[in-house]
Image (cartoon, rainbow, N blue to C red; front, top):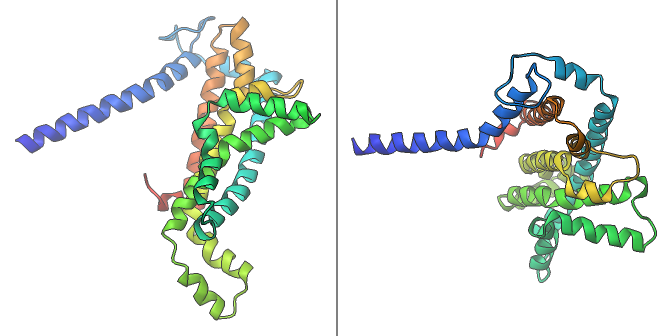
Length: 264
């Protein structure tokens, strides 16, 4: 009886936690289906009119395109740098090991707005400014790099170097060993890190707000500007699409690349 009561209490607690986490999403999705003219919940009737309005809004479509391109570029760069840094950290870093780890993880410790301000001062000091997306891309790489680094390091800690030595003894060169042995074994951590990096970059606000180029606006920035002057359910429709894109990225990563090999 005591064990059953404990299981029921644990189940109730988990249900409350899930309810707390999912309630904002339910409110946003419900508000996006509102048939009324104002952003309210519960909705005043159900309608897809605001999704149609959103799809006909070229400004929001361009903002989504900008966010997707920026997130893909930041994720790709973070994947390359994070994987190289993780390999060096696990295999070769000795005296500088702790300094390397702290340096890469520092953007997670500092507030995002401080990182953005430091980059803004730096790029204006060197004469680049915020032109050509350089500053914004570097900012997104800085805030996404720690996620790739941490997950790849976690995968490499369970790696047996004797597997690589065996491959080299059989005549494989360094690139073949990396492609056939090292990369497949650290694939779960690399995929997980890239998924986190993409989602963080897609939803980043502070870095994008300070480092954006003139005329460039990501989806969070465009949504912020919209809500300053409008309060219609179109904002909820845009947020619902953003939530859907994030879920699609996670599901595609699991189904197509094998994320199911690593559970949390």
